[in-house]
Image (cartoon, rainbow over all chains, first blue to last red; front, top):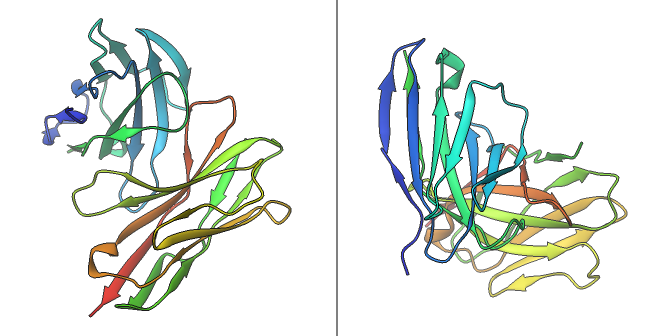
Length: 113
Length: 114
């Protein structure tokens, strides 16, 4: 049974650019949640996808968008990058849209310069 | 909106001793879940323990146990017989019973001294 895989592990972008982060969910899981973890802080919920539909969104602007594919992998897209978008982005998958049974990935460290 | 507060940014413990990490939360919900997660340098969040609010009995997982005080909205984590591998950032988290998102605290960095 594979876990959650996120790519890339690190990347550096320039302010104003766009970025796409990817997440492969654990085998058998149909729900993916994305979290932003700024340095020295706890993760904050961005949004969740359940069976390819958005199923809840946190307090993030529309330039944060996502997608879930039929194989339940997911993408997080961020447009018009700002310096404050620099953070660790964590993906977590689960079976059904429940708050337990999450498997987290190791995250993508995004630096915006 | 729910909030989770961890008032101890850093804690340290000697190997083999016991340490308690504190967490308080605020919610108007009556049914919810509480969690403790561990985040080692590998960055992957690992579930340590889970408590359902409707259960009066405190959850226990091997060396990890919680003290859940619902009226006081307090949820502390006790680590017994601390090991070097317990060193990590620990996060307290909350979720409503019907929801699917986690609300995390700011974290407590635990150091285990040999």
